[in-house]
Length: 352
Ligand code: UD1
Image 1 (cartoon, protein in one colour):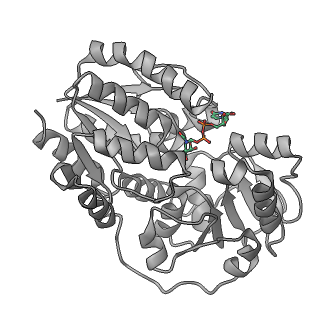
Image 2 (image 1 turned 135 degrees about the vertical axis):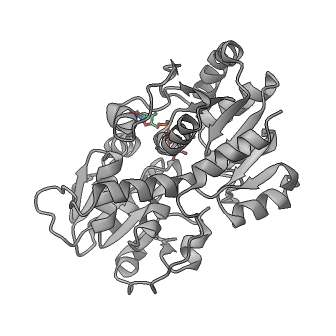
């Protein structure tokens, strides 16, 4: 079987790692196409190096741009790549512009399309990711769902017959890396002791509106313990543009971390404050309480189990970070760390 993976943004490289390893160990052919949506070394190369992902076979070098420009540039390059490699499956990941571009290109060329991390919904139609994931699910021949909740959303949209529950591949990689890094403590900025909050903020809805961003930064800066803010380039640029200081009060802003460093930093943190989907789940898997700076989450299991709370108003951050530790749980809503094998099995058994 020949699978062609299309990736381009940081969280997709993390999801690609266990898939690449599972395809390799089952001796399937795997072509990796990197769209170039993310291109800084700390947003891309370090993930390939640390997670032992083979070099991309094709790099489209698309770079940044408005949604239309970026997605269109990917589309115009992908046709020739898919035709040349003629895979049994095109596999797209998650909900970025690289996902929707890969999906459109595959279905127009009548190449079977599988969507990894299918069925997630925020029901927030302001989010670019919501359109990307809904459209990709409806285009796909095979929807690979990480959770029962996701399977329920797919069924509600009439997609049950094309959907399979595989578990979540981010669990595979998070547990594997946590095991590999052992008890080594996180390297933190000077002045940050053992008790700190780890934070990431990057979503368009939090960074593009200056008042919203100012409120979030103020909420983080006012926390009573140091806040290690690992800053996505989008956050740095938006803050600079709006004249917002990312080093005020409790804030210690650093560059994005590589994946093993992130796992260590999350595991040792007192609390995580984020708007990232992946980090909410990693915090849960590593049992660090999390507060999510959004009005909804796709990963509702983290909230239901008490490990994640939504901060609707950033002024609530001090109270939310001070809340008592949630009850211990051994629930595994995101699978047992073997989702990538389930994905490969699903691809083999549904091959045309
Ligand atoms: C994208 C995804 C988002 C995902 C996030 C993970 C879409 C619509 N959004 O958002 O779902 O959560 O990736 O990180 O696909 N930039 C750099 N260097 C880079 C990459 C980006 O400087 O390597 C800057 C550029 O100014 C760019 C901005 O960050 O314009 C935003 O990048 P983009 O890929 O458009 O979206 P993200 O915010 O990263």
